[in-house]
Length: 184
Image 1 (cartoon, one colour):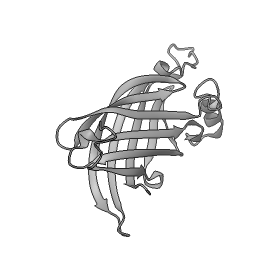
Image 2 (cartoon, rainbow, N blue to C red):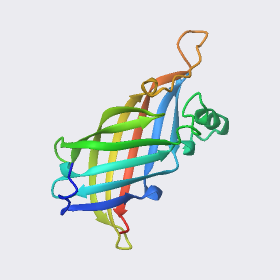
Image 3 (cartoon, rainbow, N blue to C red):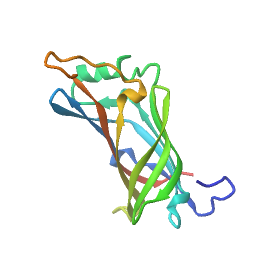
């Protein structure tokens, strides 16, 4: 992390949502349901010389959840799950970044769903820096992490006659992020 007076090598990037993805997978009965969030934004203060001095803030609009099934999405937006009217965003704010070898980093931060905040450490891979065909600079990252939804107050479930529950507790989150220099 850097201080406000120590930003000479930091470049500010904005997440390019059109070329990024915030997706998830969770067990449902005996298969998996995949979904994504369609609306999100983020800012990365990136230090190419020393990425451990970088920081990131990422915000997802919870109502933008999309599992390709209208009724399920409505249920996920309800008080049984995300309660989007009361808790409209899901956020991550980094607090520390550590090198993990090569282009891998351990990005620790505060992850908040439904006003429940927990410190998590995301394994993040820096995919590099490139120019697109129009000459725009881009940086890219990927991360996968599994959370227990109950840790964030997402408690709804249905018991099965054969034992067990309808919805799994473990949710695998997959992020693929491209970012462009922020407009100053």
